[in-house]
Image (tube, rainbow, N blue to C red):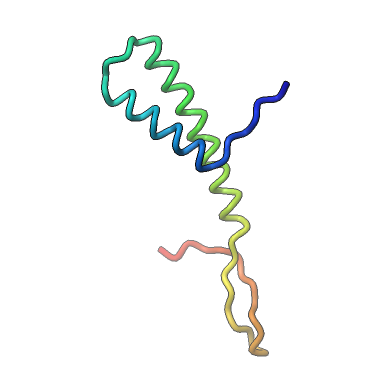
Length: 77
């Protein structure tokens, strides 16, 4: 049976929980490594979800005819 993909919020919450456990420093090495591996996978999942969301975001601006015009999202650094 396929594993259910967590929502972005669920993955981020679990990642935060993992970081708190690892920061305590009181876990055995094997458990720390296991949590680190899980955290790495969750980070990849979150990053992919953010990339997909960014691709869907568009900026609206008035075109020459006064109507809104969709533009691809661009970094405004």
